Length: 485
Image: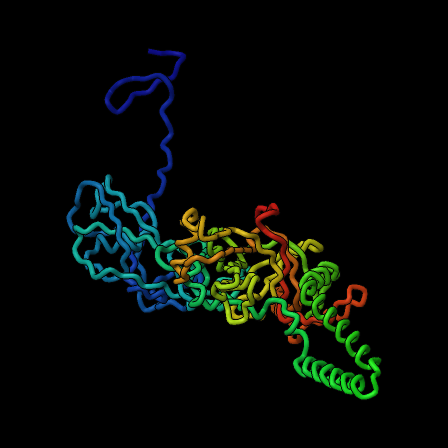
């Protein structure tokens, strides 16, 4: 029967319209390569060793072809293990050496193998061996997953850190791993008041670092002046009694009054004059500052590795804290210290601490590390504010203050006390005076080797004073807004 439409007969005898399909070329099946067990030796791993220019062991040849194994097992095959030890079963061993779908008598078509042949390498290019014990038998499902960071030393990140350099664990992205428990010196540790004395990163300042007029005058000069006036009074009195001439005695009295007034003026206004000297000292630009140059830098503070916490108000993330307890001495009350005079406020207890911190320069925007921790010499000029005023009538109204006294074994009795506290917290604006030091592109401000002399301020009748170490200047941080960082 003729027809205009072509038709053909199928293998089952049916006639269908259309021309017979052309036989398609069969896609060649991929055969996996059975690799011998390497035992963790990269020299026996073939192509992986060539990637690192490591000569491979050529004594063993590879044979391509289907993988034969024990009788087939149906069901899904999956596992989760990290193993580099010997596995005696051939089918399980094949799961470590194949890189594609396995089609053999050893596994059914529904079997799925999870594997990853990439893993960490040490600095010699050899894989790191991790084993949880030998495993045998084909029943135990095994999956090796060795992806992770390379073991060779990572390049420097350029971050500025203070204190001793120590190594720590890294996660898969190369950042420090977060672990529970006490942190080491590289972590950010908040230091409380009870552990200040035992932390090497914290500099404990005494009251000697504060301004004192007597400290700025050499003892030899002071005693020489006293001796001259004693001799002048003796000579003036002798002349007055012998020849009834009071000129010499009058001159000595006038000179003594002038010197006494000058000393009193400096004792009262010397600290304020030094603060004015620091404020009028010109700011330097860190970008153009030379190594070893004495500079003054003003900028915003950022905490370092060890932030502080204020003693009484518990202000977090501070770089400097100061807590001072004063007592007023009346006629029949106890003295706060051996040099406490009557009808004055005397210092009974003082806690001042400072650590390394960063400062961002206003002039150039550069960030420098200020080395004030680890026992460095520091002269702080930080304003303190009155926190608590206590007298025998209202001491029970402040339980926090009584708790603070109890923690330091200080008795309250019936004393008139005043607690002042000052601090430099993160984001505050400060002025720092020190020496620039550049070390491997790390910009630091360190204490100067010699004290800084302010010189005589003749207009203000201020005698010269010396500033030792790094000078810190900050106003009362509780009354100014901080810049969030």
